[in-house]
Image (tube, rainbow, N blue to C red; front, side, top):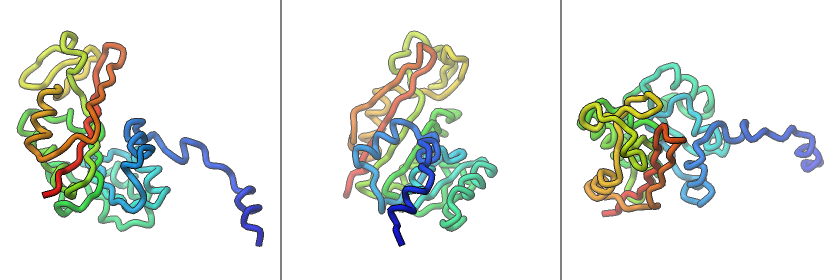
Length: 211
């Protein structure tokens, strides 16, 4: 049987089919070799799984949680070969996964939906607890970085951005304090994208210290 001929006759998947709508900064971590096959991935606040399409296609062991039952059902449908219990309808601050179970935790555009300081800290603690020592924490969240004079303080750390959104926004000083307090170390410097003066999104990538 000519396997090469069979492969040539198979339709080439489109980029969309291969990678879904993966966050470009998460894809960057894959390209850099920070996320490799054999790792256990936990998406804390997975939504409809846009960041999991490629990882599931490549056979990663994936876990995920979200409060939206319809979204979790959609993710389960993407992963028919994995146990349904890998995908749970849970808030990130109340996840029932074992502590230290994941090599990589993804928190993508989730934490800025915190209602207040206590909620933010609970969401962060829940996401951090499931990461094993030495593991990678990938987080994208709203910030005031580069937008300090353009956001309007509502209360606490909740701000209204020029795009009309009201979110819990962090700054560099807070992320530095949290990194030290949690026992993290920088995997990469902070990177912030300012979207046409409307909002700012920061990429925060840490390693969990061993010991």
